[in-house]
Length: 238
Image 1: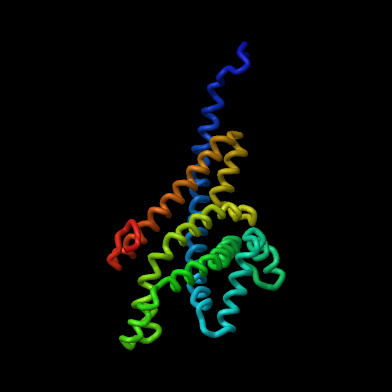
Image 2 (image 1 turned 180 degrees about the vertical axis):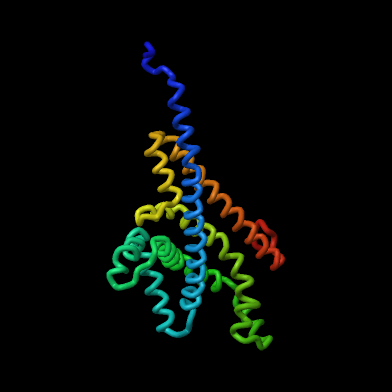
């Protein structure tokens, strides 16, 4: 035994490194689950955002009111509780979803409600003169929306959509509470195995930062393309 209380033991770091190396496949599998949940949840949220956003602009009170009720409910209740309800309570009613589907539906409903306000606001921001010009050209309502309104509103939606997408990504660790082995769950298992809390969670921070940064770059590229089609500079609106 060494006479120094803080003597370096060569086998311990090597053992920890070995555990990290052996756990890479599991961490990679968890990362793939996180990516799947983020992409599928975002796709569902985008679909619901447009549906609810268009409903919110309807002239029919029933349609507009229904949209408002749905949006306020899912914005006003906890994503955590929504996910638990889908996982634990829905089977009682005779409908059972696999855990990943519960997470995706919860993400889609919650962030779709927030996204609907983005859609509604961007559509309302298109100048009235553009709509009037489209009417003067005898365009149908569908043609006005597809050819005039949406192309101008879409670039305005992308930055807030990017913010919601990053928030969705950062909420994916909640999936581990309904038995889903995402990257957070796998990294926590690794922490338990190695006892190296600092390294495990530092790596997890890096993983989420890289994912968020990649999503931001992709959304920035999408915004640049959308603005270029309108003849606007990539750095701002014309």
